[in-house]
Amino acid sequence: MDLKSGTPYWAIRNGLMHAFPPLRQDLRCEVAVIGGGISGALIADELAAHGIETALFEQRDIGWGSTAASTALLQYEIDTPLLELCRRYGQDAAVAAYRACADAIPALQSVAHGLRDVDFARCDSLYYASKPRHCNALRDEAALRLRHGLKLRWLDAGELAAGYGLRAPGAILSACAARVDPYRMTLRLLARLQRRGIAVHDRTRLELVRAGSRSVELRSQDGLRVRAGHAVIAAGYAGQHWIRQRLARNRSSYAFVTDPLDEAMLDGLRDTLVWETARPYLYLRSTGDGRLLVGGADDAVDRPARRDRRVPDKAKKLVEAVAHRFPRLALQPVFAWGGTFAETADGLPWFGAHPQHGPRVLFAMAYGGNGITYSMIGAGLLRAAIERRAHPLAQLFSFERSR
Ligand SMILES: Cc1cc2nc3c(=O)[nH]c(=O)nc-3n(C[C@H](O)[C@H](O)[C@H](O)COP(=O)(O)OP(=O)(O)OC[C@H]3O[C@@H](n4cnc5c(N)ncnc54)[C@H](O)[C@@H]3O)c2cc1C
Image (cartoon, rainbow, N blue to C red; front, side, top):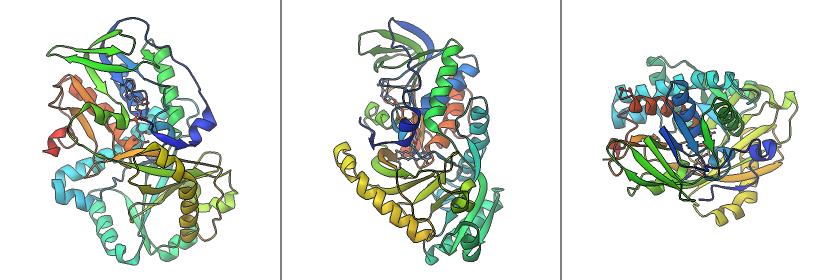
């Protein structure tokens, strides 16, 4: 699956940071994690940190899937508003999902804290009403979140213009957000695991041969055998190929990055992620060296060649959209790219076992706009499943909700 087009910034900035050896002999472990993106890395880190003998396998280079294309806004806010989630799943489940996402931000911070130079920074998140007629629903959303202990402030049009140079009728400002270099974080996490004696193999594609009642058997493209107590399929959007049921829609999202900008030009955007109520939404954030990363203009394209061709036009559209909202920002893209992402009908991810493969094959499908936040939650959720413990989101994030 070709997951990205153009020149994703993280790949350019970091290059190939570290190579891991391919699998050269049969291997046994407690948990085999398939997929070396940010999800696989966070899951392997969580399992290894709790004494579970883990091995990770990546078919290409580590971090080179959608992780390298991600704009990595780390948010507690799910693409589906809390109001809408409450309507679908009831207040308790919906609030538990939002709270878990809020808890995942400091959890990601503490993972990043143990790593060198991954450009992690805490930020605010600004969620603006794209149109005056979106304001009432957004105010209701703010009131509901406040009632459930999620801290935020309402900003009116004057405050948005003064603080951010943003033309919008109103917005929710939350303090619970962050940004990171997701590619560097993945590489650093897995290199650290490797130094601690965990098997990390790239250029090793695994396929499922048999999922029995006591173990799982996998085979590499070279015919090597991996036997594990559990397999975790953290194969990103390619994870859908492992399950016959249709679980998500693949779409494409586009992004560009600027050269470093003047402090004065960035102003309130230095420490604030921005997104909006319109769908598809425009989103932006700064990087540690003062660039702006802008994304959006999502479409239903799922063919890499078509997505490749659209990158320059989409970058132009994103520049115009920013200029419309932030009249003082005349941005010049220096690198532009696009990437596949998968969207579920309710904006929630899938984590856990699927009836097609039984309880020893666990899926990590962190699908949705805040996929990295989901991956952090999923790491704890899957560890609980492997240790046969309950987890407050096991039900809501499970495949059972698809029935
Ligand atoms: C343009 C764009 C912008 C985004 N912006 C954000 C954002 O702002 N915030 C956010 O939270 N999320 C964002 N996302 C989503 C986020 O990037 C993803 O949720 C995240 O990168 C997924 O990581 P992953 O490890 O699950 O998948 P991937 O990074 O794709 O990793 C999966 C890996 O599995 C490997 N693999 C597949 N099959 C096999 C096999 N059989 N054997 C071995 N290896 C295999 C693949 O090669 C791949 O490297 C964005 C995504 C895109 C495309």
